[in-house]
Length: 172
Image (cartoon, rainbow, N blue to C red; front, side, top):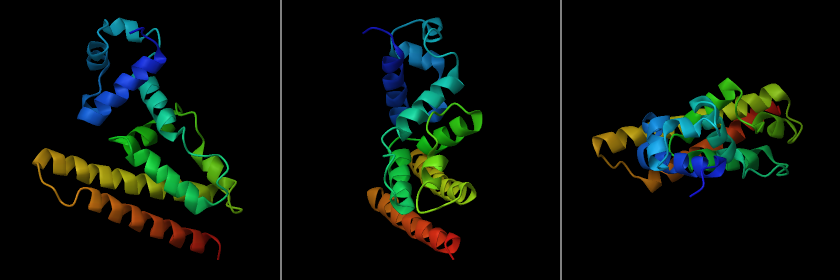
């Protein structure tokens, strides 16, 4: 396998899915790719840049032209929860300015939302996703099953109801 940004990103996501963010290190990533750790730095300057690439990948499939803030929030939720610790990664990348996708900007173009209203929705969806993923991590570490997929579906339904409530408040 030739080492390139795409291979690094794929291996990083695989490590995330298997072990979580706490175990994604540049050394572990290099080992998974059978390269010396220094080889990674030709393609990504540091772990924060790597997390920005992962976050950009997570958000890449959100359509630009949904028109509906509720539908865009549903896509944001689905994208973020599709990767273990995805919410934490996206929040960290946004804080560091390393994510390429401006989800707040996309939302601000929907249904006449202003940027502060769009920011509220993004914070709500990412916070709810982070809450779900934290509960899932605790359940994995305790080897306890509290509903698995049913828990995820209930969380999604609650988040989407919350999005509708926020939108109703913003539009009143």
